[in-house]
Length: 306
Image (cartoon, rainbow, N blue to C red; front, side, top):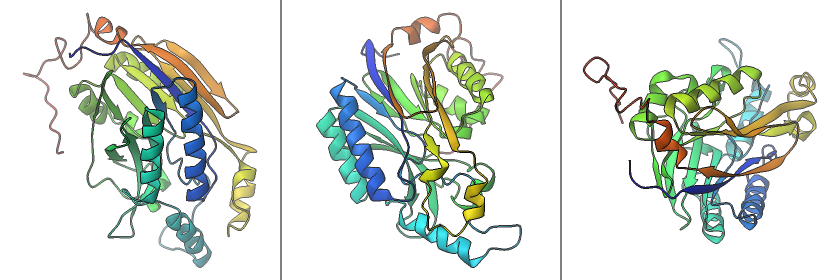
């Protein structure tokens, strides 16, 4: 393991998107990046699909074997507010990362430049403003598959940061054991998890992964409410069935021993700040290094098709 900068000053942004509006979401992200940088953050992490929001509870008119016209209209609005990568929004985000002199990770709905397919994508920008990694979600979860396609590239990209290799798994990708191992084999020290998962079981999962990978697990969820949905959607009955608080958050940071560096934050927008002691990563691997001295490559082997 290469020498690492001993402390990572991180900001985990638990914020509400401006639903279905890429311009307003981007503007909000820029303001939050500047705010976090003003507090000394060197790594700023946003949730899954912050641009243009996670359409929780919406069916877009899909049922088995059929669609409807109103659902197609709502999907087209969401499509129009998904972004090209690279594109105008990524240019602005890169400029903000450069102005902040910080690494920035943010989830977006990516619109393919050639086809009409959308991807659930996580972007990482360097302090120089460069778009360093683009990671598309390997397998959208459940009904997400009617909105976003399976990743067809950018499976396990790693950003080489001063604190070691940094990678991301989007929400339930972290339930894919072999996907986790793909990051472990690349030496991940900062495991980013942009997600929309506010249940109790998820907290058990993230603490386990931190121990399993002996890495820092950055759990970045979003907070949003029912009244934040656009009023002109064609599915008012679907929105009406949602709880007042649709996603409660629960963002936090877990250390390589499975302990909370910051406790989960619930039911509000917040920027969570922490100083991560990166010396804990190699120290924690003394007795267990899953892809090092504790591995048995003669017995177990993972083949990754990059």
